[in-house]
Image (cartoon, rainbow, N blue to C red; front, side, top):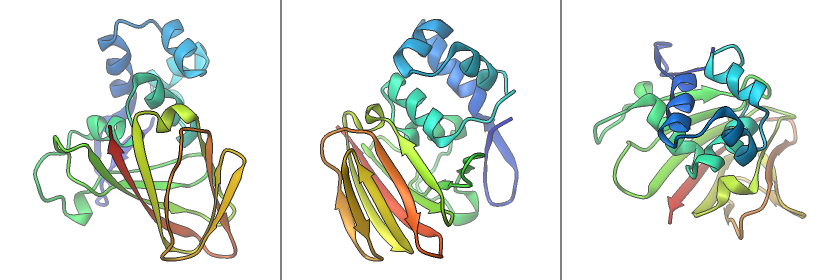
Length: 191
């Protein structure tokens, strides 16, 4: 079962339960969410029951269908509070498919801003649908490694220190290049 954990390894609130809660709060059936997200009813059911660990791509599709950023969906599952979130207490999630590790850096607040630190292993690719970028502005600041960022048909080859403002919503893929993992900061501003 997928859970969001802090660095001490303590499991926190269930991501599976949060996904079910978001669906039910909207009065949607599994079929409704499947139609809106492009994820099969069977897979959504398995995720909600904790029988399957959702990938980054799947979570991107579900959060987009809910009209949420991936950051917001994961933060709601965590229920982190307070203005200071110590590094050891920052919730993180690991994609079971790619090993991609996503850490929620910013404290949960009423501000329309999220800071997310991502570690992408060597040779890994993580793809997110256009719906993940709707009603949001995204910046990617590469901290370490080399990254090919596919924004639709455009590929941005990024080096450490480079910062990219994403354009109109389109399917996007993060891909490491070279022999070391990538570490980057994603800044998301909800509109």
